[in-house]
Image (cartoon, rainbow over all chains, first blue to last red; front, side, top):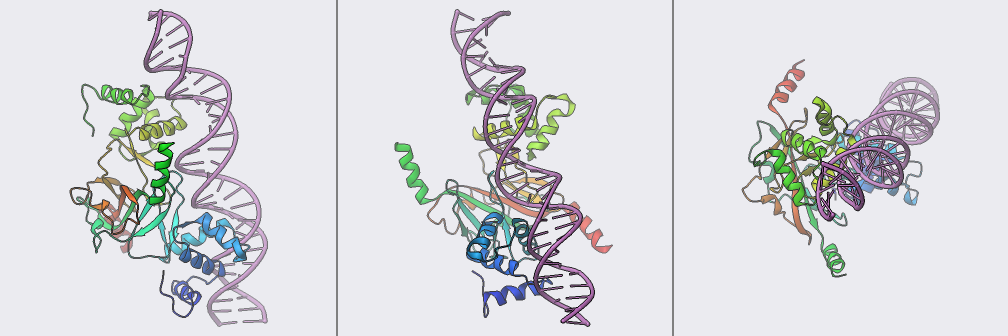
Amino acid sequence: MTPEPASSTDYWSTRLREQGLRVTHQRLAALEVIDHHPHSSAEEIYRLLKRAQRVPTVTLQTVHGIVNDLTAIGLLRRIDLPGKDSAARYETRVGDNHHHIECVRCGRVEDVDCARGEAPCLLPSDTHGMTLLEAQVTYLAVCHECELTLRKETHA
Amino acid sequence: MTPEPASSTDYWSTRLREQGLRVTHQRLAALEVIDHHPHSSAEEIYRLLKRAQRVPTVTLQTVHGIVNDLTAIGLLRRIDLPGKDSAARYETRVGDNHHHIECVRCGRVEDVDCARGEAPCLLPSDTHGMTLLEAQVTYLAVCHECELTLRKETHA
DNA sequence: ACCATTATTTTTAGTAATTCAAAATAACTG
DNA sequence: CAGTTATTTTGAATTACTAAAAATAATGGT
């Protein structure tokens, strides 16, 4: 997760104030939820916030606003996994340009460090004269559980 | 582009029939348009088909159906670039798992061969027990033109 | 070449993710 | 503690895409 001095609330409050944003409990709660449930969509974050009365009054539109704002100031990273059912997902692990691996069947998503130490994927064969900012990499895969399931389905 | 024996129409017709799909002029025209305008969205393909009366009656829904079907049988590759304004894009260059580089300002998209010959990005640091299928890689960048524009804007 | 069969396309609606704008609310400043 | 103004809430719109039924057209058999 993320380094948390004193309490995570203090940590996020400091980060928000640094960027000139107000510290609302919607934002704090969203950050905590995302920190504990990485790769969540706005919809999932919204449900987690309502569940257990964390922030009973929050709306989905507010969540969208929050993730947009927090992504803009670098507290969150937005990831767009390929696929038609693709809602944007968010995570608090920012700044290291790590990648993701997703099971094409069950949708399970895990973090993957850069394949070769540095940032090898930032060295494409041809930049077409562009200045590189970052590489968005998603590995598509089939997880072990799904492979077993698929094997059964094939037998039947 | 794609190897084209005799005419490109013959080529695509053969490919369609091989897969048991009927050869309609909507499909043929879509394939030609995508071949000549790689990285087009359904909307863009739709406009290109209507323009110049290529297929005046075609509808956007049909284009969606076509790109879905042709992607399913491997005649097209679907690419999902990150970003909120992200409509899926399609290209006829399939099967080589190449990557893309996109200018974050003007949206220009170019093909990029795999960074190191083979498929280096298919070697993540940890597969989490999953079987790899492919890597979806998008390089985010700023193209030369936009860099000049940004420089001017900064001066002003 | 013609007709029947059935895939495709068209037409008409609907859904999901996200954005926009105005009113209500709640953080920060002094 | 009160005023200012960012943020949230409320309510509505947009974009990309999907779904289902009716109309059309591509292929196979004669």
